[in-house]
Length: 239
Image 1 (cartoon, rainbow, N blue to C red):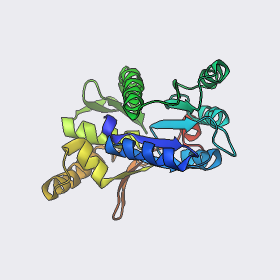
Image 2 (tube, rainbow, N blue to C red; image 1 turned 45 degrees about the vertical axis):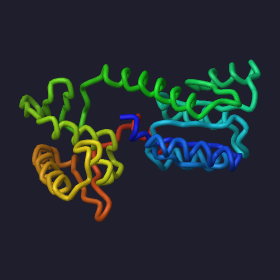
Image 3 (cartoon, rainbow, N blue to C red; image 1 turned 180 degrees about the horizontal axis):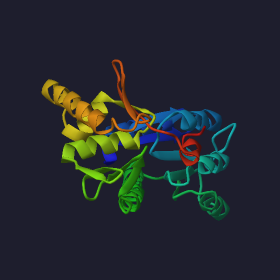
Image 4 (spheres, one colour; image 1 turned 135 degrees about the vertical axis):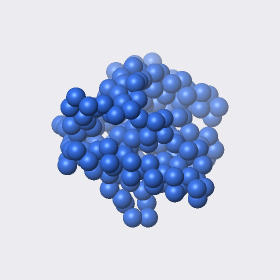
């Protein structure tokens, strides 16, 4: 869902950064703002992010070099470059280093929003073509709503599937309770919170046959699905 996007905004102009962040937040996006490329790269390595917007002229590490480093760790995360002009050489260089789009100033915030939606829609369509996911020694089939262990299948309810897939998306990272409630139940009220605890217990029971797979309580924050980490996962996490 678009409203749950976590966007890294790398912009050195404070006024432009503030205007852009306010717009993105108004659209429901969590926005992490950085004023230089070095800070942006550090945040990228530490945070779970869904989208990057970077000015090509940010200091210390410029936008092109930032994108190059990001692409070493994650080849799929969407990147939009912003430039003060539309020099053909900058646009070509931007796409060569892995950008999904290039916006030359001046542009409207509404145009930025539409481009984010279009790029994210294409990315999600590509992701949905995959429906088989490995969770430790389990196989999660999101198309057929089943969790498979060895030769045994367990059918999942819609909410069980949505919650487990959310944990999988954030594997080895914390899923905050408000996010899970909004994403799976569309509401943060008390009854849904208690209901979610019941579903977490159910999912724990489903995963109990693999000791390397666990759902940890992160006190006062949320949950974390612990799964064995592959080399590919480590690269995407910036380790």
